[in-house]
Image (cartoon, rainbow, N blue to C red; front, top):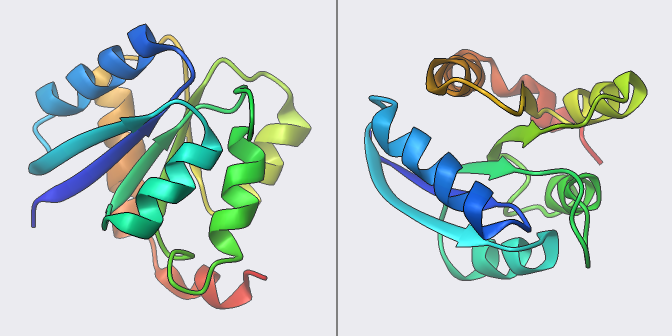
Amino acid sequence: MAYNVLVVDDSRIMRDMVAKAVLMSGLDIAGIDTAGDGKQALEKLRATWFDLVLLDVNMPVMTGEQFLVALRGDVVLRDTLVVVVSTESSQPRIARLRALGAGFVHKPFKPEELVAAVRLLLDAPREMAEDLP
């Protein structure tokens, strides 16, 4: 199955780096799009189907955490796979993101770390979605 991926980061350079890592990852990628903040990302997700979101946390307008809460609260989008790709080091915040069903990869990252986090989500049972708000 080929995946449509949305890369969400306020840094254009980082969006390009993450997109390049995804393309080099060996995952079957149908397409990649980008957004500069969580609000843009939600708009894109409501207009186009994406299988996977690679999400920064610290962004203007709508943070990654705010985006993730909104995503999980949306009946149509709630099961979208999300891997947070961030420099975030706050363990309580990382725990909250994981509790919302997101994988986590620290920046800077190796492409194989990103692939491992994605594959872990792909292989995980989706029962958790039933427990989300």
